Image (cartoon, rainbow, N blue to C red; front, side):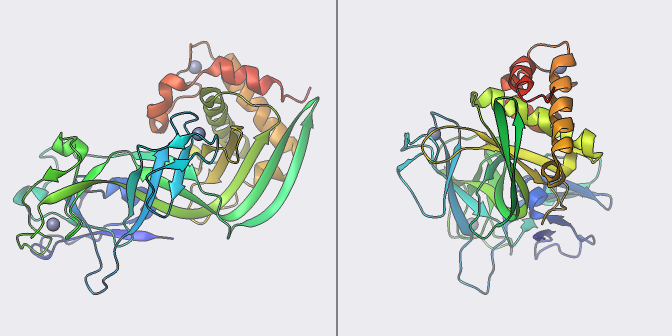
Length: 349
Ligand SMILES: [Zn+2]
Ligand SMILES: [Zn+2]
Ligand SMILES: [Zn+2]
């Protein structure tokens, strides 16, 4: 587990008598600069991305860009100006974003407004954003199952210790010297460089006033099942199929819907989207592997997913079928009829 803290700043550490800790998968949103946490009768507002004072090492930085052609998010550990999309080969020469992995956690601000009694205002919250499957070379392959449905087939690849990256849904303007940061939503300023005089978390005037845009992201390891279908569909349809499968999986396996999650993936030249399902519990809990363990469980999941899509009466999707609180960014893309047509080909009778 990668647990991080929202630490008190050195000026008012006596005011904060509660320890705030979270797994970094949640911490990147719940503790991000500007986010407010209610605890122990107070609202605490995060303001800094913590840095290690003793070491000279920087934050770990990743680069990501969404392909304008196929919507797959590309990832790089090195700075890039231009690269070919890993899935479709389109040149991505703009839109590359810098991501900070905030392993040292976050620090509460030192403005008097940064710690106030609970109830004085509605706490600001951010949500999780993009999820990217990275397909780590250190992953362990547990097995490959092929299930046949008439002329169609699905290949399920189970892995453990596999890597994904999760991001916060907003961008931040960050001081690279002291870690002071404000979200674009707070600033209401979308220019590339934001000028702002500010104090460090130790209360000194910071020598830097230029804030640069960054995303907050976290790479984590967990259990994964990759589903490769024998036919292909567009991004919106595959995303709809994925949310139907997630809902069906939690019902068939009788687990919490928040215990599993997913994203789309594509690689190597032709855009054939595969569906990545994973355990949300850090390190993995083995839940998701159960759908690949035997054919009848997988058949039930497909059957249930098809029912979820075909039995609803909405158009194109609603909270009873494919939509939920966490997939708000994609609501307009989710189409239960498109998903039902796709899933129909994989029914086992
Ligand atoms: Zn692409
Ligand atoms: Zn600074
Ligand atoms: Zn519906």
